[in-house]
Length: 489
Image (cartoon, helix red, strand yellow):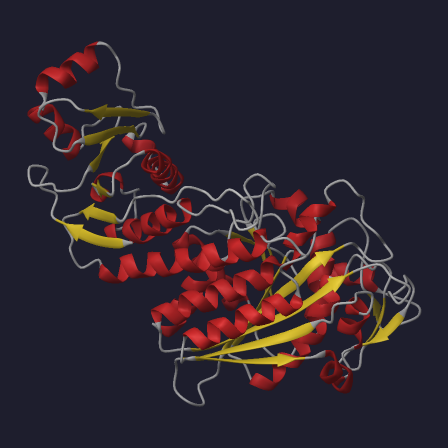
């Protein structure tokens, strides 16, 4: 995709498709130019109330005389005083839908006209690029009939500011990372298993000189005493793996920022088996791992001066004669013992040993990303990622990165008051608490393994996917990428 920035001169356009933004309470420069160039047509449409300023409405103009482009879209934007980041993204998504229908190969967007309050042109260009390219993504890998590819090859932003190259590239790289995470998440579990994720990691390392990869197999985990991780994978015929990807963009010796992704490529619940209805959605229990690969892809494209390590804890949670039983007690890599009350609380088991493992990197920060609990969906719905941390500054930086990328999170507590729910008479603690505060007790469980470094936990069970129809979202790749870019700056 070619992406450029041009001066907003509506008399010199070469693009085939032009978007004209129409507000209820104020004319934009593009709409004013349209009225001046085609006064009879626009006056007629206005008198007939054929143009709507309602947010998301579209009036296509094709084949009329004196249009600046052969194909023009008048997109309603509501009231300018109410135009927010949410409105901006909705407007760009509307444009994507229309662009898919069009046979136009190039589109011009008067980006300055739809800046939300307190946002810069650079922010708009970055977010619009990300939204446009993710909007063009279509899953068809396992379909016999492939989707018709978009013919759109050129996006031109009409803007007064011209130093927008970094914003365009950042948006493009974020979109590539988001789409990679979505593709991995949308693949079925019979294709995307632990070995497949390892292969994709090797492919990413082969594509970028800055990335090295190491695959840790179960025999090594046994030697390291990863009893919690192995308690999950032992029920499956497919061996679990820990995949370590190192992006070496900073100086030698510079402490790395570590991303740890939960990669349960299928979660049956184990002996504590899930209900049949909706179990197919458990192919998405590896979206934390997908977001790590997506973020590493974006970072490798952008090449910031920072060291990043992506660690993927991947396994299947299956039912078999060798599966872990409720009531079993296992010893974790750090020597602590856990009574497994519910085998469907498996994500915290693979993560806890992996979080102990990453101590060896002497990290500047560690962030784990996991579709960990249904409780976070009850608490926050599908809009905000739950952000826990043992370091208030790290939590604030992630929340800021989420606001800046509009991949938002919400701060959650890690109070000791909840720890009583994890007490066990047979082990140091149990792997689940009560139903009340389930996401919090899950995060508290993980915190027992992160006391030697600055750590945050992102519960993406509500934001990693919304429904089968929409599929994986690619969140929180944008938040993580922005967090890492901010650290490099």
